Image 1 (tube, rainbow, N blue to C red):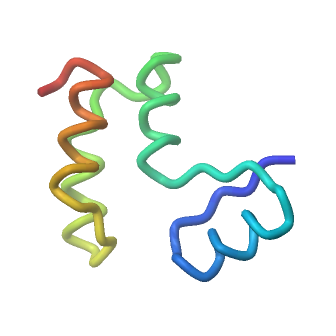
Image 2 (image 1 turned 120 degrees about the horizontal axis):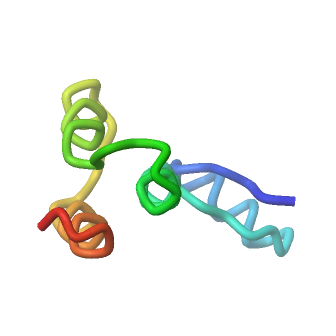
Length: 69
């Protein structure tokens, strides 16, 4: 089972239950690596514009991982 969750409380609960978790940024990395999306930059920008919190460090790490930095 895989839990996709970004909020702090949800992640804490999943960890308590021993469930593997992945957030939205991790899904974007997988999608880019599997060539399901052409780029992460516009999607991460759109998420931020819609109010999704993505730290600058997380964005930088994702972009480095998918070689868009």
